[in-house]
Image (tube, rainbow, N blue to C red; front, top):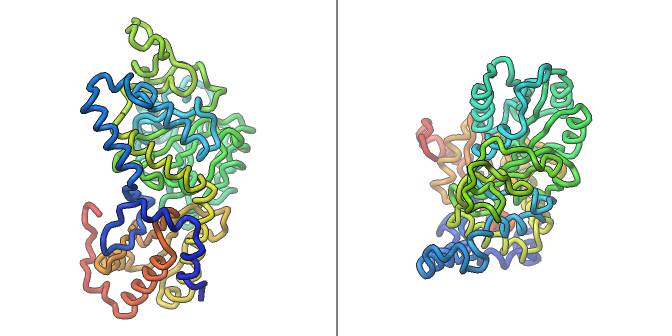
Length: 423
């Protein structure tokens, strides 16, 4: 049996930050990798932006602190330590899929005579595949011939040698991979894969949606060409929050594939010149006006994370929580048909756990009825995502106890076996 959760909670340096969140009453919330809970800092930051709008009107663009004009850059500066990136290589804009389209439009060269294949993977979030497919069509290429997805041998994880073999194909130009596989929680070796891809002359980019805020990144050290992510999961910026992208400085000066007025250099933005005058750095990839009411909660969340000790402190707590859960799962749930389907090593897993059971959907339904909020992924996965800032060890122990009770009493068998459209 794993350590006493009361002892672990008493010794946890991040335990006081639990009070910073609005916790759903009567629930153990283990779905932070889908939508993070609202923190009081994010709420206060949003209310402050609304008050600025109420008080200043259009003057909010220049009369606030920080000004709305510079809010994307302010957020980039505070997000940079989580990504190991210089702020001028970050752009807080758009949303995940739109940002992927922008990066492809800027970097992918369909005119390349011998390299026109984009390499993805069969496990990634579907929206990335949709973007890759539609982008190829827009560039006059057939996705059936020019999009190649690396298969998973077991439908759970990606093998390093399979990825490297796919990258070795002479017709590949660009690679898009997830840092953390959203279903299984597998953490890929970003540094090694980036180095190998670049040795082969490939462009490589990373979807950080399921890793940012849970796993430290070192983008400047590792040197990928680009990355993109959402901010509403581990970072708690709110439903549908503004996304972000990273563009390595070796690509600075390239014309943005999708040009818009906010991507113009700041001193010329309001000149409305007939030709586009790109801003320096990743800011050139801005398209439209910044999402002020969406950036504001992110600003509050990032302040809270910095106060908690930054991404290294969050990662330590995240690993401790998932280690604790794994120990309980092995002793309490494995005898009842629940299996861990993700890599267990600290270097091979992100912030959430993936458990398999043939009746996973009904188990998730029964857990919700019992006051535990997990996440289901077809066909048979239960995802558990404890947040370092608001999940306690005692909650993790209780969640496993409730799942064990459901399995023992077969309560889940009374739940509908048909998945709802929205969960």
